[in-house]
Amino acid sequence: MRRLAFIALLLVGLGLTAEAQKPSAALDRTRVLLILDCSQSMWDKWQSDAKIKVTQKVLLRLLDSIDNQPDIEVALRVYGHLNKEAYSTTLEVPFSPQNHYRLQSKIKTLVPQGDCAAASALNNSLGDFPHDRHARNIILIITDGLDDCEGSICDVAQRVQRSGTVVQTFIVGIGNHDDFKHEPDCAGQFTFMEDEEHFDAKMRQLFYLSGQKSQVIFRLTDSSHKPFEVEVPIVFYDHFTHTVRYSTIYRHNTENPPDTLSLDPLSSYDITFFTQPPIRLYNYRFAQFQHLEVPAPMGSLRLYQDTKRTTDQPSSYEVLVRQHDSTRLLSTQPLGARRNYLVGRYDIEVLSVPPIHLSNVAVREGAATELSIPLPGQLALNKPKVNCTGSIFVSRNGTLQWVCDLDPSAPSERITLMPGEYYVVLKPLKPTDGSTTSMAQFTITAAKQTSVDLEKGNR
Image (tube, rainbow, N blue to C red; front, side):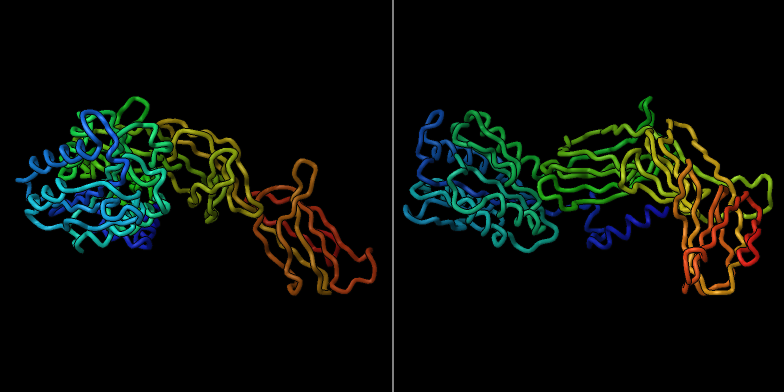
């Protein structure tokens, strides 16, 4: 529960309200901004005609097919069609209901004659969308090559995506694949069209999916492909910009089967399941109806103090858990608490004094790994009457390891220590020579007090 509370605070800190980030939130309409390349190279022949002529035929057929879909609005921005010597771009047809006739009329009259200005067109695109939090905004760039464009299309695309105005940017490449020396995935989801038939089908698919939602059910399963009872936060990131898109809680038990999530089929997601350690899925797109099984075999881990021989209450130590041979902190859990972890090996540190380190601890599927640590003992230390500085060391494998420093102003101290062999070293604050240093060896036993009197030189 503490982990869920932390994730909730994290999401609030990112400005993600529950309503805004609900995957099932309904949208009133989808707006698609067509950005069309009309640079001079669009006159080159491709398939049955010039690239611009093929593109015009495909777009005119497409607009006919969506004419009766009031929940989809289309606008048209064009670059390279106004001035042969300038990087020009204009919004030729803005968003409005029933504007298909205007779109078709403008598309028919386009004449390629300028240079590539895709970066400028994309940079200006945000102002083309009406302010409407209930709409899903999509950009669709149709081009025969972006390599010679002015500006950095990738930098501009990142800014556009991070603005939160646009759900996704798609780039449809036509012509020869050699014209795309580097597929511009950094600017959006890039698809190269090998021929006119695939071009037509891709455009129809994008417009069909723009009005749909993918119904997705996740199931976290063990090695036998069976779901188990668990509650895990999930965060969905945009694959290209790494911004948070959705968040939810995966929950499965006898009373609550996993929720059906409504996700955008046009988006690519990086998904994090906040198991211990997290499970991450990269670059996922979802079909209209999909059940996704996520292998997550788990076991549990619990550390406790042995209290069979004493009535003493166990200490409130924190337990740090890391994956084996990793320095990155994975989890913090109280001593005595049980927590689920993915099957694997872990290094554990108990924040006792001194700390207890347990290396390469195995967590096995469906099993409870339980580890006992001893109760601490108590050191009653009486120091010389003069103010002294000092430290306590523990003896391990023939070497001394520092444990803690002593209070120079206190004549006596009580310190809780784990069982073991120790040394205490004291030196007056104003020593006359090295012979004034005092050292004593002592043993700490579980649930017992050990007295060390350096004033009398005994214990």
